[in-house]
Amino acid sequence: MSGAQFGQAVIYFGCLLVAVILHEVSHGWAALAFGDRTAKDAGRLTLNPVPHIDPFGSLLMPALGALTGLPVIGWAKPVPVNPSRMRHPRRSSLWVSLAGPITNFVLMALAALAARHVWQSTTGVYRSIDDLPLGLRVLFSFALVNLLLGVFNFLPVPPLDGSALIERVLPEEWMPGWYKFRPYGILVLFVLVFATGLVSRIFVPLRNDLADFVFG
Image (cartoon, rainbow, N blue to C red; front, side):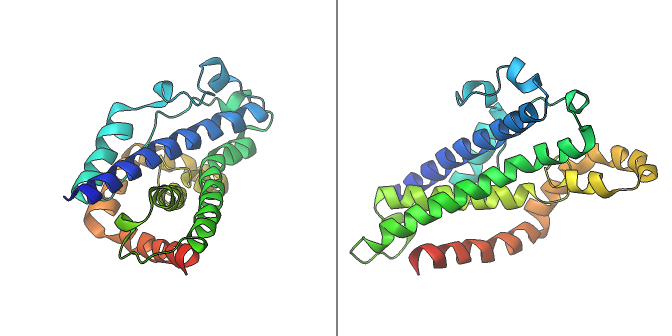
């Protein structure tokens, strides 16, 4: 790995860490808005990264991905939520789940617009993202990480946020079977990410579309 590639890996890692923390904090704020103070009382509505960091999901997994070329995935400690404390538990839980990826999409849009503005005022010829000015690299990387994190979390596989959509529409009599499946969702995710290539086939066109918007 060249020095430029290592620098870009560090940027991706930093962007991912910030994105997953904001993702989790948004769940807590949404829960609070619907009447659940669990995350607030646990001290999880803070931008201080320490309470949110999961050593494996926030540090080891994304670092390995960034440094080895494997898919860069990561997560923070889930923010505690108690649906029974919400005014309308089932409906409110859905919006609390969706708050995370929606936050990522908003951050992606803001970073992409800022990167596009910077690019349009930039002169020079650049062969790859590694050659771009640092500020532009950070903005584009942050937009890309939030795009991928938002889409990834919309996959309808537990424990991802998209599974809340499934739970909202499943007939009541199917829920016991769904609850039995949920603990195995993480295994399904690892197969999708590392074995089938399905996630890459979803993400690559989106990454290209984002690059076309910023640098087109």
